[in-house]
Length: 352
Image (cartoon, rainbow, N blue to C red):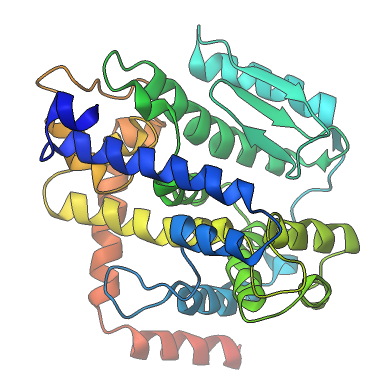
């Protein structure tokens, strides 16, 4: 039908066909859960830690291990420990309801308790679920606001608001890396993340890599324990790796590599768009559930009325001045020869 209506060479048609094929594979993957074939579909749909970035050389696992070294070197005792988790689920529900009402206006965003979810929170098209048995700090709530609300719910609503391209409200696997990476990046850009949170997201790549290489559930559980997590956290993190796959090792669910992979690729997409004098493309990351290759295609169809610009945008994306300066300085500093300057200050700190 897509080929007949739009033509085989139409760019929108290619996006729709890719989406349809992926949903077919998702159904096949779910039908074989608990087997090694599940992992084969997972790797095809979400990738592997062994995959490389667009440079064709740097792997996701290499980036994860580099970030691991940086993040574990941060001393939370001196940075300021996150506040204790004293908020219960019902309290978090009320806080988020109030914040989402302010952000989304007339759009009815439902925030409810649900003990049937694995994570502490999960977002849908117009709702956020909070695990009732979990406890939260105010920092956790701040993160949920931008991660689940400003990104996941907002892109669903922006997609649903399309009068033609309504498929943008749905998120096939090809869009997961942009979605989860953008949500993780928003935590960083709004200064709401902290070392333990960033470590936890990044360590999902390392845990999946271990499971791919044959580590079983108990081995991954014990590895998390050596990283300083309590048993409940170790179990929750390990369960994410093996859900649907094989607990004996060698065939995990690889979806969670998308947090680190997507954070890196979104950062470079945004920086490249600004450097190429195409900053308007950055906003179209929020037009719905998209892959990076979709963005120029969708932006080009606005004039034809096929696509509507996103309605809900975080402040730093609606006004790109601050973000563009951040990216400009980031590019400048990354090309400077800073090693001697770093060595100078490192020596100064040691002497002090």
